[in-house]
Image 1 (cartoon, rainbow, N blue to C red):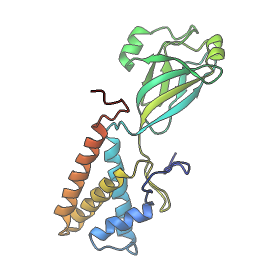
Image 2 (cartoon, rainbow, N blue to C red):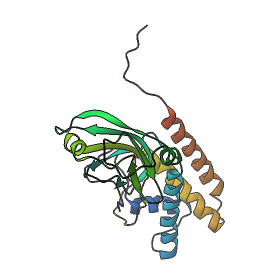
Image 3 (spheres, rainbow, N blue to C red):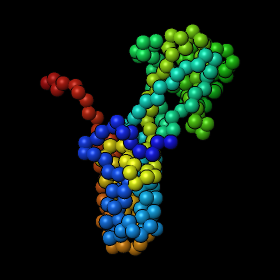
Image 4 (cartoon, rainbow, N blue to C red):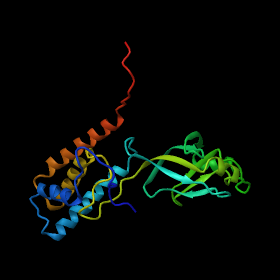
Length: 225
């Protein structure tokens, strides 16, 4: 299970470590990391903020999974951070995109594709979240697997919890402000601290700004007037 952003991912500005995030949270209530109980509470509150982020589908939290096809198999494990599907692209033997496989909701999929015994060329897929599986309408025929050895599945992802002080958030740095203010308001509420109202206002404002930013439509189209 991933616990932080990959070393090859670089953001500007740089991301803070969990240890730094905890210090920022504790500064709200004049706490110190020498208090192990308070330090642990700050970490749980930070991860609770990550849980709130994961309750929503974000357009900017997107990644892909490469699926290697196996003849006569119709189900494949989904990635650990999988949340919602976006698209499934076929890659030919040269690893170039060549068409796609379409998505159907789980109930529609099972109602319309009841024969899962005869191998063929998959045209539809669905996701079984509980079983953490990606399921195709038919087991993959060997000829199809030869023509399209892999699939490129793009999906909305979840952010993993932070567990080590050296780990960093697997998301753009814009999310850090919300996580800090969310954790600070949680601790302030638990300790009855006077900074509670300020921290909650920061939390609400940062959450609103994140949603506005995520909903903005930005293109590279020329402005033709």
